[in-house]
Image 1 (cartoon, rainbow, N blue to C red):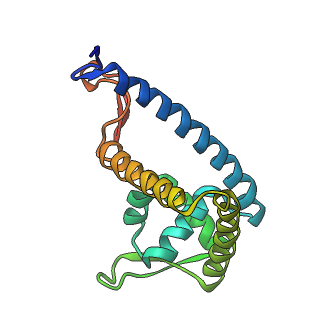
Image 2 (cartoon, rainbow, N blue to C red):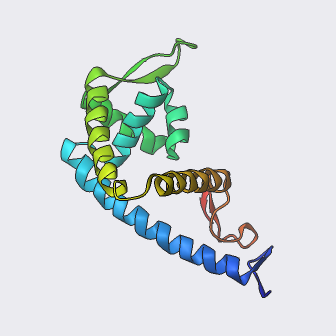
Length: 178
């Protein structure tokens, strides 16, 4: 079996070929969904990032800005701009934190919850149209594989491992690109 070196580890050529095919497939899927999300969500006068923030607040409840930044994988200044826009539009509000009254927590408003539910319903309806033609067993397998890939990618990439080699200063991580 032919093995190819990828820096610090040696992987079989077949694994690298599958990795390249996965990269291409995920890139295509992400690109399609980004355009779909941009076109669908932006018609509600919020950005895709603002929608992700609403989703986080709707599904996980009130949280401090730092926790939201971590959940969205954004830096603090970007998160502040996202939250400021949601507050200005009436979709979120800042309230004293339940644990530390000196701190502020972000909370979704009724209008924000309603908007999130509307957008979510429409996006789920689009997904239903996509998966309707698939056999139920295939649907379950596809969903399971995508969840596993997401968990594995999060464990690897969110931990700071990204593209490149840190020893050469060409890697991107939590501190940015070197």
